[in-house]
Length: 114
Image (cartoon, rainbow, N blue to C red; front, side):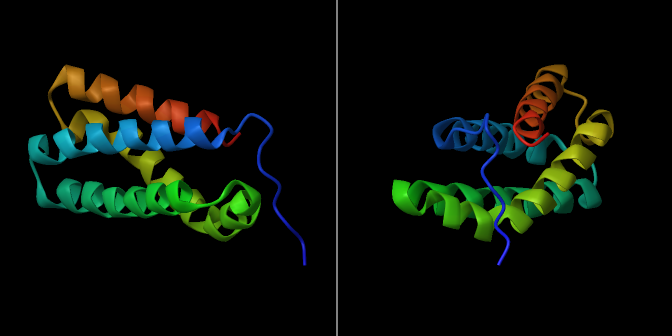
């Protein structure tokens, strides 16, 4: 069975903090979104991020790699959806502060997975 190693620059606390930051920004963006498709996209990503945070938070240090490998497909799918939100942020929210927070947070998360 092939395993996916943790990226060298990935620290669990950084990953959790990054996802939490973007989850907080997405919560604000959800209420600022002007259309239902944007709200649906944000809500789906929020749910995935919540699952990722919960799983990583409860993982023991010795099982982190195994947890990460199991979570990697969900992380990849969530990161793809985050990239879509980043590309569409100007359509999702007109609040420059929220847009800036989203773009910065998403960029930070995506940089953890080169």
